Length: 332
Image (cartoon, rainbow, N blue to C red):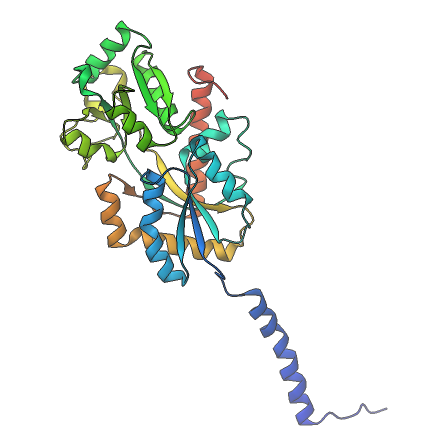
């Protein structure tokens, strides 16, 4: 039997109907994003490094993504509170966080109750900045060099107090690693953030602290004494202060320390949303306005891919495991 003929009009109708399905499906799969405001969690108090970094990118991100970008401060527990807030939020890219070497590399090694696995529980977006720091002491000590600090600490183990921005934070661990190299003992006093620690140092509640570029005005005003920077080479922020590796202290000949801050979403965030967030953040960080603001604080912009951030997380976790095995810092 000869099959029935189909008219040209019917053939065209069927063709159009067939082609409409994938177009409709594609449109549905690529639903508009963002659909509401974006929140950047800054896991420290206003004025701290993460808060400053978050606020630098908000305007550019708002313009590029077409929605309001706000900063939500969640200080405490060396960044753990902020990270846990991120992981409780819907995993749709409307909530991201400034994440540090402390939160993503140190805490998973040293805090058995951290409540997350790194990097598995995260969708890294980009590293943002690395920054050296400067070793500062209160002027009342009368100390002007690392050699004098070492001599004072050896004469009275545990007498001098030092501030960090949280137990098992990168600040705490880096300072203990520094003291380990010098075979000296100082008493640790943790604070919720760097700004609180600096306030304590200015008030002589603590006598020693490794501080970011935020120390510069206090050093210039004579309220703090700078002993050495943690940079590999001369730091543009404090060019008059020698790096610790040029201080003449033998144990520090190969020493440098430049911690990082970056941005992360939670694992499970759609890949296309991760891509858009990474582009928006990269563009914001590379803008002249952001570069100027961050350079003034001593930050070195290090924008990169999500994989580069993931690699940095894993590399630093390896280093922290070495420190843990040394016995200088304890789990908990």
